[in-house]
Image 1 (cartoon, rainbow, N blue to C red):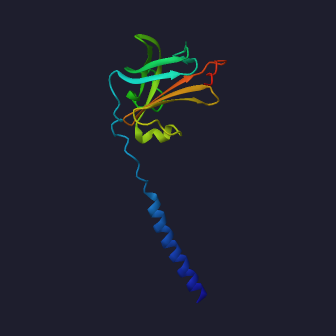
Image 2: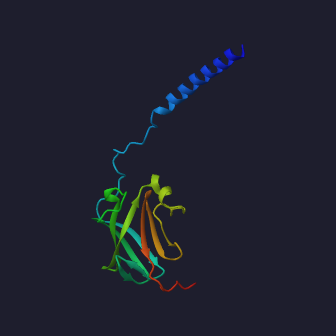
Image 3: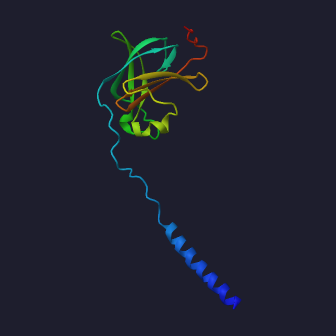
Length: 166
């Protein structure tokens, strides 16, 4: 009688195991990769005015501390960064008055992806913020325009003066 129960248990286990194995053979549903990229402004767009508290490097050239007007250009950054969608890496110009003082690459991040890119709370819609990152090696300027985020990362040159406390 024990042998029959053992046989029944083995057969029942085999049936349950084969059912479970059949359930795991089908691949999980993956998100569609054919969706259109998120909408980003296509032409020149003024992002706003921000004070850089210390000198930085913009496009490989020194840029002193000061207040700059940031304008997103239609020019795409090349070469493309690995893993980016075409129109989401572009150039931003930094101006004082009518004179362009420098430019840098801006990463355009849609609202639904910002938590994957930045851990900090974003600025309010229409706002901006300036942050020192990674041991004071980078200065990030972050604009939020209607839920689309514009992130510009400037290297801080070694020995750049720290901002004065006011």
